Amino acid sequence: VETKQFADAERVLDKLVAIDADDADAWSLLAHVRVRSAASVAAGAAAAAAAADVGADGSGAEGYVDSEGQAPGLSAAEATRLRSALGAYTHAVEACRRLKKATPAGLWNNIGVIRARLGKTAEV
Image 1 (cartoon, rainbow, N blue to C red):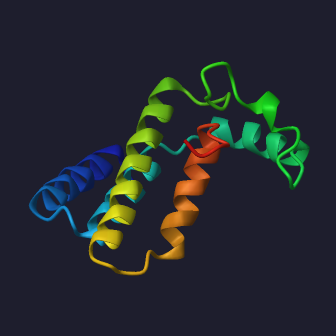
Image 2: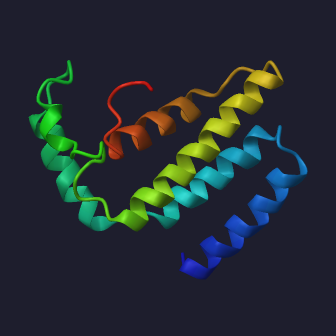
């Protein structure tokens, strides 16, 4: 998929969530587009190496977060796009709560994956 297609999709979805802030599906799609546009091959090798060294209880993870709380191997642009996607996924969860709908497990999974990629290992 070309960068222009991601930009077009993001523009349309931004308009959609502006029209209906309670549309959890639109927020989720917007987040997905933002994650896909932030995909980085370089971060893959670092993530694989980190996963091999981190125990199931999280021990050993300390070395995979820099002094600013960001996982090494992420460019500033990728980290910014991931934070943006995390915000959109969070809006999707909040929309589900406002509408008293069950939050799909996939949303929680995506939030967890992005938080891990950003080096946010503890809830804030």
